[in-house]
Image (cartoon, rainbow, N blue to C red):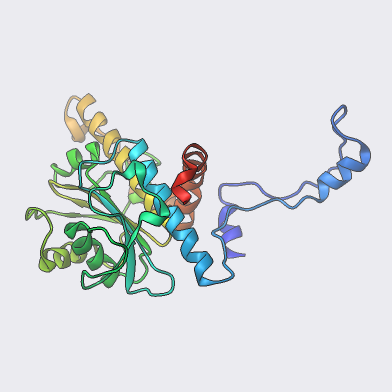
Length: 294
């Protein structure tokens, strides 16, 4: 009920009491049946068992990789996304080292523990993926999925060493909900660097800008984590364009006032919003590349 009430913020799903017959397309009886149809609400699914949930999550993760590839956000062997296993929360699924995002299927994912050992799968795992994501999943039990790639505008914006400004409705999704890690120490190979990164992410933020590196987003669902990455990358692009177009750079930008930005976040920045926003992209990538579910 709480989720349905939240949906009422931005979607109409109450059935009208008005009785009409659409001439030429339905009879009076068909009109009565149409009025009885239940209006579906896009909520996260529930599962009969752990196996069903695990299959669903791995398929979502694989579809997310395909989407990243569609946008051109792959960069050699860099970039990774993980999801926490629903049965064993101290284990997480991750992409294999060196596999192109555009070829990843659900069955290709590797299961690893927080000590960096492979539990299921027979391919290598990017060590930076383990260090970064292992630290995030260990420190933040609320994080089901984390996404990081070296996308063009994210890594470009990261060189500024500052957070996104609330200059658009979309950017308000990250208002007071992301941080900047301002210490680049090279490729993230040691546990201490992972711990510093997680400390910078904080206990509640959903995203972090890694200075001189790129973006990392998290979510309570796989859907939300991938949507936040897509949205944050585009917000970085938007702000870079706005600053380039302004005579005095970011000093000329019309920043949304704090109170309004905070109120807008309640509509576009919640976990529920992130889940809903991802559904159209998920639908099209699965339709275009159904083999990702295998």
